[in-house]
Amino acid sequence: MSEILKIKDLPSPKGQFILGHLNDFKADNKHQVLEDWVKECGELFKIHFVGKEFIVSANHDMNNQILKLRPEKFRRFYKLNEIMEEMGIVGVFNTEGEDWKRHRKPSSEALNLRKVNGFYPIIANKTEILLEKWKSLALKNQCINVQQELMKYTVDITTTIAFGYNLDTINDKSDSLQQHLERIFPMINERITAPIPIWRFYKRNKDKELESSLKTIEALVLEFIQKAKDRLTTNPALRENPSNFLEALLVEKENASHFSDKEIYGNVFTILLAGEDTTSNSISWVLYYLAQHPEMVNKIREEAIATFDNNSIPQNHQDLKKLKYTNAVIQETLRLKPVTPNLYMQANEELIINNFLIPKDTTIMLQNKVAHTQEKHFYKPNTFLPERWLASNKCPISANHSPEVIKTFGAGSRFCPGKNLAMHEMLTAISSICKEFDFTLGVHKNDVTEKFSFTMFPENLLIKFSSISSK
Image (tube, rainbow, N blue to C red; front, side, top):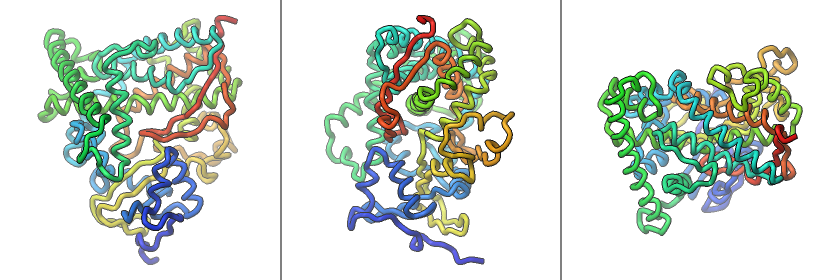
């Protein structure tokens, strides 16, 4: 048996004397910094921030084992839960152990496929609104910043599905809830990555604004909770077919252990947090690739016409199952541009994985993108090739094809419960946009860069659209 590998035995990229690797990691492309360090040091190495050590793993097998050992052996990096609890948010996203198990079942049931299918009319309505706006912009021959536009699209969908609050940010109609949400999400990311919690000692203006926004949103959601309870009482039919996530969660609450309104609020807030930028950024990256491949746009359009004929959008959730090529394009995008390329885990106890000793409380950064672009996992790994995801394809495309290395929605028992909702949104948006528009990049492809905030998004993604119906 080979000797057990310890942290002290690991290589480390070049850093600064006292700060270590902190300055490099503060960059807004920290995920790419980790990728570069993998090239320098291999799939397992250590870094430190002012003396505090972290392990980085880009090894698929190790990362997969760590994710599958949650929640018993590993938890999320402690700062995430610390920051969110400090903000009054306690939900399935940030709780651990027995608390997580108590939150998981009602949240998963509230977002199961049957209930998400029931939410489809909301997605359809917001998609039609988006198409109409983009047709108007196309007539003006304007380039569209699609990441910003799609953020509005997913915000409108998520707030309506979360608790029935009907925003119209797609059409730039200002709303106080939207403004409060825009203030909160960047601050969560800033605080998670802050080496010193300045806000605990001195309240800056943005800290005071954050506290005000959190109080306003909590009061608003608690009001929505009471209204939803009243609807369920007066209209029992909603118990079988809830109109939004909040109603579904309240129904599941009745079958679960005691769940306070504060915890319901935390889970509603979680869907807002998890459902806003991840989906919009993924759709944006799909359009980035399609803008460079008009032949693929044509294939999606042909599939859309065959599926929903003269309609501009899929007519029901059953239509989505028929969009095989559209799904393949989405899967290929998630492989090459995962919007959550890094995950941060902490060991609950000392354990050995792949002959490497992991002490209790060690923080491990899982770099999952590297495996997506390795030849051993995918044929022509750096080529955008949706056909690899179609079951009918034969070698060589299928020779090296390991979809299990992709962790877009996590793995193990903490697999993302919002996957069904995200896929419904992506399939609807992409098939509808390709059916209604031709489009090209408004900038050179190399001018579109990867930026990392709470998730990874495309910066400077400008696309010029022309409406099919106007030709």
